[in-house]
Length: 117
Image (cartoon, rainbow, N blue to C red; front, side, top):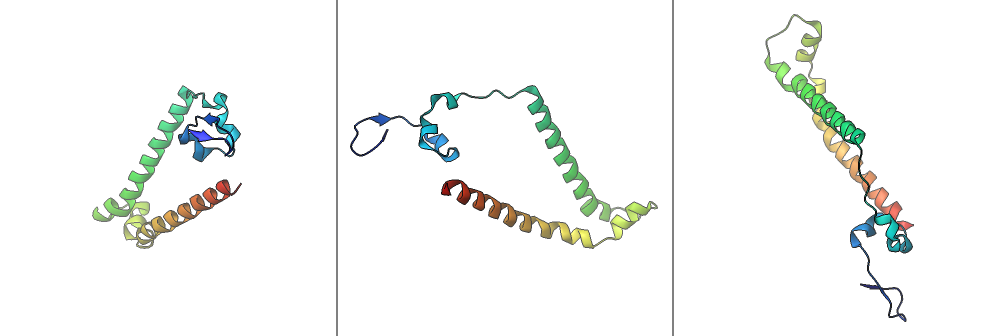
């Protein structure tokens, strides 16, 4: 329970899971905003498409960086270029930590901006 002010004996029940995602105390007290949304079938399909695309990208990248180097030299020009390349095999692993730092900085700045207002 939470008191509205020090002089008042009135107590209010607050769903504390919603506190981090709201901007004002009055919005927390609004019971209409507690309605759960039902997600449509289209949203599920888009989620599955994104998971499939990310998996395809991951397997394609692993094939180009690891498996293709282990195969015998191919007659295909594109495969030869991928097999003889050493730049992207080093670039991709170095990009991961930089991306993690950028995402962390973005998240922190969003938190500071959100809780400052």
